[in-house]
Length: 466
Image (tube, rainbow, N blue to C red; front, side):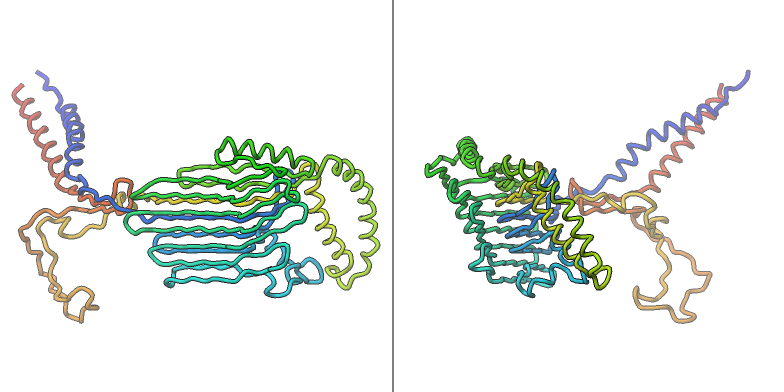
């Protein structure tokens, strides 16, 4: 009688052993109980007194007044306070436009205050500067910044004032921000900005006690909040309630109706929340030209354009070098005029963004970079109970002297002891906390091989008895 082949049975045994080893490997490589680990992460906040922008068709360029920003990352805090933030205009002002002269060089040195920038990288630090521009239409407030390790940062601009006749008067402008880490438990960020009084169109609309706030916390206590409040609001001499959201909306609608003839309009702040932070937007004052001005402006610009071109052609020969002449200077003047005219066009406006605050905290989670790939092996792990030969030199003692190595006949001496793990993978940053996993792969492999041999022997015995 033909004996049945044992090969299929052997393949089945191998497959069965593979299935059987899955729970066995999981049991042998179970991780050590993880410890909850607080991650310092980051925190940031920012607030603003005002920002003035020229806007056209969604594009804008402008400057910021009274900007306070703070941030901590890990154990280091950083703070910035700027009474004037020129942004893109600051970069452009440093570029030569004619005769090698940059627009920024025309202002006397020191006429524009330098912002305060503080870091705790070298230890605690703080700095304060005095206000500037007293008696001018725009008074710049004091600047303050401080930072300390482990980890806190504060920034503030206080005492700013803006006076633009017939448009707006803003006094008592303040902006402050804080980012703080309480090691092992809490991340915090907060920002506040405010205006003591805002008057529009020579007092047609007056708002007092404007306040923007944003707070964000994670860690032992996790919460966030942001909002905008107005102490009182007066329109054409009449007070309007503005304590609640519905009352504030009604009051702003009445204010816009009163301002319509002047080309001014107000857009209420809004709160926005994400997983990493919360913010309240500025109160936007939009200054646009009236329909009558726009109707007259278009034909006038069309008529002036040929004259502009002829003037440039006329003065082109009067130049010291290709980069230094009357044409370059007049061209730069045209640029400044064009920027102003764009804001008066159909899709343009001058926008004052008053106040605003944002705050956020977060912590990073990183994948374990040592959990995969070939681990570092040690002799005790590869050969259980075997110790390497003693070379007679302590670790870190330097190179061996000639002849100090043992003879080639030296053998490894077995010693008793527990089987060491082939590898240990540890992680300190993970959603579930930190911990280590010890992998005893050689024990699992031995048990798998023994199981395969046992099943093969049993199959061989069955065939002989058939």
